[in-house]
Image (cartoon, rainbow, N blue to C red; front, side, top):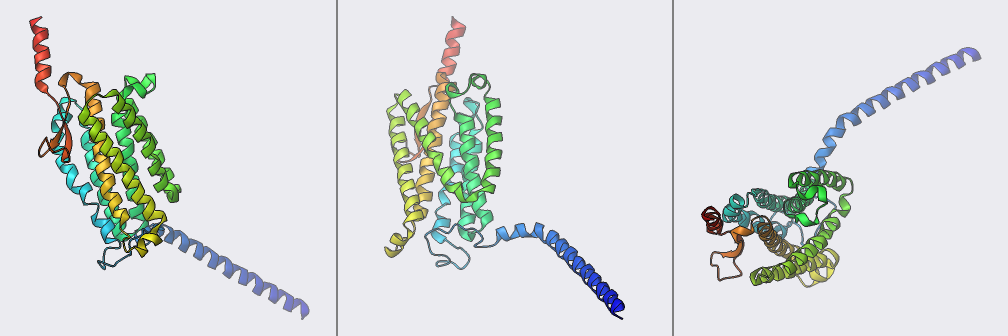
Amino acid sequence: MKLGAWVNSGGRAAEHEIHLDSWDNMASQNRRFREPWEVLRHLHRGSSEVDWCESNYVVSPTIAEFVNTVSNILFIVIPPLLIVLFQQYANSVKNKDIYLIWTLLIGVGLASAYFHATLSFAGQMLDELAILWLICAGFGIWMPRRYLPSYLQSNRHLFKWTMFGLTVFGSVLACVKPVINAFALMAFGLPITVLLVIEMRRCRNARIHQLASRTMALFAAAVICWINDRLFCDVWTRLHFPYLHGFWHILVFLASYACCVLFAYFDAKEVAPQLAPRLRYWPVDTFEFGIPYVTLDETSEDQSLAKLHHF
C-alpha cells in the first residue's frame, strides 16, 4: 500500500510538473507574441519621461503643451521661402545640398510639434534625431576644407559619407541612452560657436559680423530659456509664465537658420570667390532684421572669362 501510494504520488507530481512546463511554454510564447506590439506603447500619449514646464492639456484637450507645439511654426513656414531665396546659391555654387538643410529644418519643426502635442516617446526620439541629422548634415556640407584631414580635403564626397556613417552611429546611441540626448545635442553648440567665431575673424564684411553677433546673442538667449524651463520650472510656474521652452523654439530657430546662412556665405567665399558672394535681406535689403540670404554676382564670372578670352 505504501509503495502504491508513493508511486501514485510521484505520478501526480510528475503530471503537475508537466502542466507547469506547459504553462511556462505558453507564457513564453505569449511574451514573444506581445514583444513586437510593445513597440506601439512608445506611440502612446505621455509615454515620454520628458515633460516640460508648461501645464498639459490646458488650452486644448488634444494638444498636451499648446504653446510649445505652436511655437514651432517658424520651422515650418520660413524654410520654404529660404529654398526659393537660395536657388541662385544652389545653382551657382553647385551646392544643392542646402535644400537638404532647409528640408531638415522643416522636419525638426514637425517632429518637435508632434512631440509636444503628444509627449510620446516616439515623438521625443523623432525630435532629437531630427536635430542630430540637421547638425551633422551642416558639418558635412559646410565644414571648411582647411580643417579636414589631408585625405579628405580634396574629397568632400567622402567626408559627407563619413558624416553620414557617424550620424547613423549616433542615432543608434541616442536610442540606447535617450535620457542624455538633450544635453548631448546642446553640447554641439560649443564647436559650432567656436567655428563661427573663427570664420568671422577671417571675414572683413561688416554685415556678416553684425549677423554673426546677432546669431550668437540669439543662441545664448535660447539656451538661457531652455535651462530656466528645465531646471527652474517651479519658479516660473509661481510667476505664471511656464512658457520659456516655447521661446527656446523661436530663438533657436532664428539662430539656427541664420547660422546656416552664414556658413553658406563662408562656403561661397571659399568655393566661388569670383562670384563675389553678398549677404542680402528679404524683403527689403536695407532692413537688417529681415530674412538673410546669399546672392552671387554671376556677371563677375562672365567678365573674368571675357578678360581671359581677350588675353
